[in-house]
Length: 241
Image (cartoon, rainbow, N blue to C red; front, top):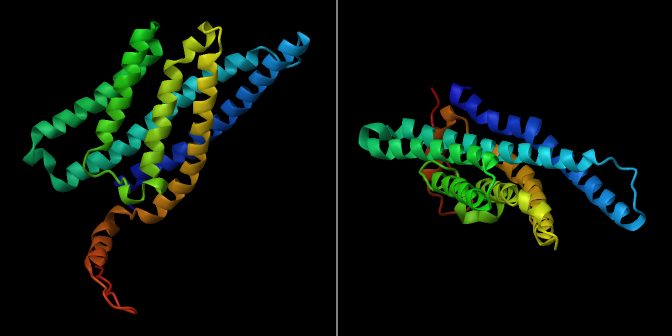
């Protein structure tokens, strides 16, 4: 196993150790917060402490940063791995510099989104962060599996990240809006995000089976090039050193 394969494994490791536990805790605090709100509205008091809501907000902010960060990590591994393999730097230096700048701008926009107070700046930085993820995802080397987008780990991941970014951007509006419109939007979008995260568990496992180790890539590609027009047929295995 090469160094690039170890870097690739960081993505599922962080997902299992950090992201998915955070999802469970955030969902738990969301349910407690909603239960406390309903009990307080009905009886005027609740045994659930008020800190449940604060923890939900804080952990939700951490979850957004973790999801965006882990998506950027996976995209960086694929994009820069492709650049190294194809020696893109020698062919198009501007393209490589542009990709690096997009990574920097996306990361900076995400950080500034946490700091922004006004609605306009939150909208701007959320849009820039989302655009950055989409632009990077369109680069060569990304394992997108577009022909089977409905079971694509890439598309699920981008969708989840965009939902998390939007949820973070509208967070202050939830407490300002007396009509509960943004609260309902927040609940609906995050229920959808939860389903996508469950799908990520399935598609991520599938990707681990489909994506070969770096030293295996040339042999797998050689096998795919062999045509088989008759059934049953025999595919000649490539010779290994």
